[in-house]
Length: 268
Image 1 (tube, helix red, strand yellow):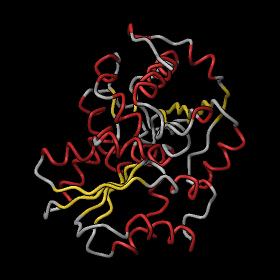
Image 2: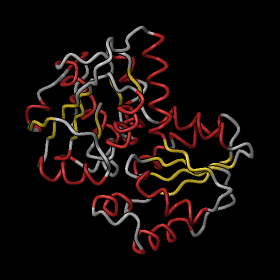
Image 3: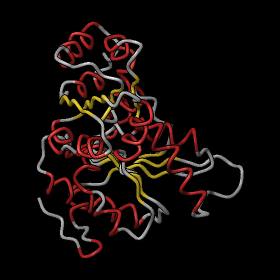
Image 4: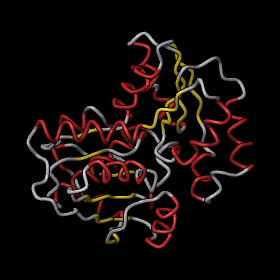
């Protein structure tokens, strides 16, 4: 699985809890984050390079644990890869539609995710009414470890002040589950927060079972992290997000940029 940085660890945490016997390779592209403000074509190139690296490690499936990359690269990436591939958007949309009988759904995400309208378009095609808000300050708040403070509440109040009446809100960035308590307090008890990480874990387990790809045996699987940026920084923020323990290696962006799988050219 991969993400632009550490946010995808919220997805990994749920996957590890749901699939304890599976082993995971997680690539955090911290040298090139954030993905949110970057052009979609560039993010597609990054996703192609990273997927090639994961396939070289012998993975049996790929989870795009990044909302921006899911919006930019799927479903084309899934069609090109020779293994089952999931993003975080479709499971989040399905969970939100189930949780919002009134059909009024909000989307909080990065600039890139909100601008792509990937959530809004899918929700609206299903008959929902949508409201979306880019929240670029949420990521640094989480990574600074102040996600349950007055600072976080002030910023969340700012982003949510003009919201209409809503039945559910999708946390459309993998960092945002760290802000659940603040967001739930502001939104109130009648608004359901939809954490895509939980939905993705459920879908991946279901599909692996259907494809007869679940790990055999009863022993716990391991976790291996590949990081393009600074490993100590990744480890520090990963601990704040509750990422599973594992082994680490550094891989340079130059090594990633050499990857051109499936006849797809990565562009920068």
